[in-house]
Image (cartoon, rainbow, N blue to C red; front, side):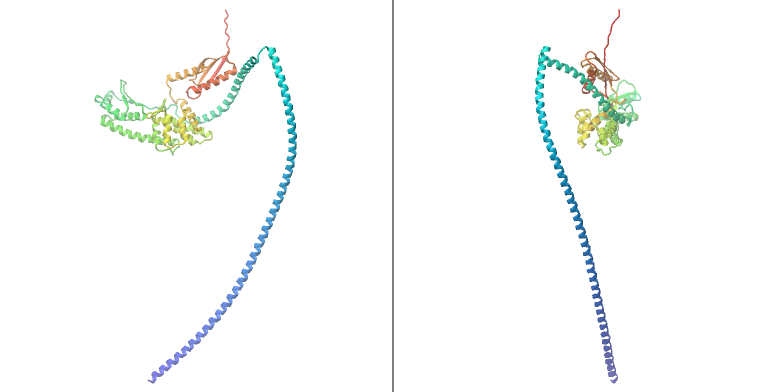
Length: 517
């Protein structure tokens, strides 16, 4: 029991000692923390005071800079104001001098005006005196010539008319030669360059409408029993088959060149295959028709690639392809269109216009020929309507409608296409012309020339590209001969249609014939 009490007393005394020790230690730590806090406070106050002084010093420096900048700006503004005042003073002095000069000039003008009025009055008096003298002289001349005023006027007008006719001929001759020398040289350079830069065949292809038959037995198989094969073929293709006594040949006739070509290819395949009956005919014609539609698109694509116009509407492709089977006087229309497109491009480039637009108008100018066998009207109007539906521009539409002069040219590209069309059509070997039409053209040319007064004879030479006009020397002199040549050229241009150009040569000579007996 005593042991336990002693142990408890020891524990109590030990706990008191530990508590005292802890209290002592905590008091020391608290004093140290207080001392450290006081030191931190002193350091913060010192740093804040230092920072405040730095900020005050920076503000003073910035204020000093702003003040210096403001003073500099004020000085510059004062200098500008002084310069402006100096300029204004100079302008004012210049205006004063000009006003003085104007005052002097005004006084001089007043003096000149007074002098002119005085001279005008004197001239009026002199004019009245001269008029009186002229009237008096006129009366004396009429008395001497024993003529009335009307008779003298008629005689004078007749003399003036004769003189003017000769002078007009000389003036026409001079200006025509000058215009021809300047205009023809330039036009010749442009056209020759366009032709030289384009190379094409001398003769154009033409559509073949005959099929070779190996034997008369094959002709009979083409006709069929009681003509059933040929009727089935004509019904399927829409063409006329002409079989006569000509050995080894069958003629395919149709106004539509594409249908005629389909019929020709189909008949050649049937003859090569040997199986000819209505069912086989329909099968072959259907296959060739499908191939032809694809071929038309390919031909159209090839044409636009050759013309370098990839942005043409797709509906134009088969229509352009149809032109490959269309001919005009033996000239392939698609090749003719490509020629016109290229020549138009060269001419437009020489004239400073848009070459691509000229090439587009040239390629599409004859597009109506692909449809003129299906629609009424001329190919210019048909082509115009078709291109208008596709949204083509004014230049292309006017070129299609007016390249034959049916409508007035509203853009320069129409005139360029007309020139290129004439070049392509009239180059050597481009077209074939019938003998009757050729003779009629020469006869019309001579008839136009002989219709003028003073022309005795006219002869068309060089295939109608030149005409020799024999003039009566008693009715026309050299000056009037130039006027006659000009009038004949205008008459030919307005009344006749011809390829290229026609040279008019007027010959005037005097022949004296005597016989020695």
